[in-house]
Image 1 (tube, protein in one colour):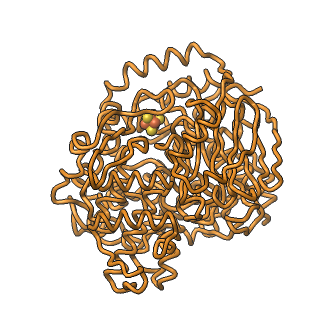
Image 2 (cartoon, rainbow, N blue to C red):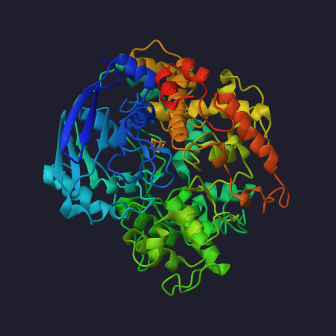
Image 3 (cartoon, rainbow, N blue to C red):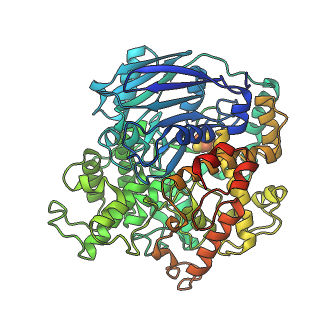
Length: 634
Ligand code: SF4
């Protein structure tokens, strides 16, 4: 049996209420590596071509990584994989928290759902047993009430619940999945995919021991890490501010989304600064399973207008920008309230904020009028309007029913699909990082198999300083020269390809990038020793990064089969406009022609056709994916 794993994958057919256990060997786990590899394997194998993502034939896979549940900082993530209701592509989304380790301890490495239950249900997992339970009474409740009700039903507060909310049950295309109310599989609309299967939640409680090859090494490393991570500025900053410091940092660099990406800096970012956040909202720092970094924010806000339920946690940077600066809202209390509403209903704050921004700009340009908005006057800077639209979207009430479809579908509906302000890629709304200060992130938005996602790959800004810990830690990957963040040369693309594999390796292993080099503080060498101590494999970075590539190629094979090609790897036109603010304002940062040449070169480098995106036969053979080559045909 594989170490680090339980060796069991659960197949749940919701239509026929049938549950089966599949047992897999060490080679399966080693070659697929973890969550995303396992997920894409089942997606490509089991989902028929061309189906609607809401069809019962779609799958949704919850899969843990190799390291998920190890007693090492930031080793607790799991992946959700399926055909995305937002993009129609192969999609994945990782979340930290406590659910992933609990799933393993409950006796399963992964759960693959197919079919559709007749009425809302949840899956109850405990110590190797699985049961489909009625959730009809929970279907419209808030996430907190559902979590409490499930814990009460089973008489334990230790139960970990991954669930979608009202937005998911109402098939809002960007509904997400929450675990412990504060951690999210945010992108790709997997909450809506759960909703389409009438699957409200999965609840896990386990006492099974995950077998490790060298538990003593893991214990010692965890203790050393907890003692030292704050000595490194990266670790110290994350603990103190979480990600809340990014509004002011990105504003200073001219890369903060403001006014639907038409501006990129604030005259005065103080209202949304990390220090203001700590003073006005912060109550305590929260962490995930076995993670001393505690980058999550616990807040308290007893305000007559914007009082929040602390159980839903505090906004992180993406939410501060998506529900805040990009909508010209700088009221932190209102942003915190928006965060709470989104978390209660399971709305992805990035897609939600961007959809409101898109609608506001359409209203400003007279593309839509009050006749389209139930009489509402849409405008930037209106916090109460933002809060109202969140409620309406989750309920699909009136104009909210239209917002629930996301930016790209609205753009097509309103006749502006090609507009520069359709800020989506493959139907996924842009996250809060402007490629005009880090072009590699833009490359990631374009080439990602599921559209714009800031977690898809490394951010260039980490690698521009030769003396930085981040840069130095990637030299062994063959990245020898620091790169200006706005450069788009073959050198940059080569480095990007290596970092892409590294990032995918982290996702596959179930790791949070904040814990490990180059973004976090644990050196890659120590990480590899931890993986050996978990699995007993005599492995190295080469094998692990190659296994991660296997998962990425399965996703690209799926997309090719669905009819996607490199033509879909388009950045919104607005991002090719001159930089609106900050250092170098008014300058064209990169040319469209150079950018799309870079996209083609990227495909050449990863072994895919630069027109169709099809993984090449030789590359598939190299990775041991002969059957995928047969599946795709000539
Ligand atoms: S670094 Fe933050 S998000 Fe990542 S595992 Fe630790 S507490 Fe969770």
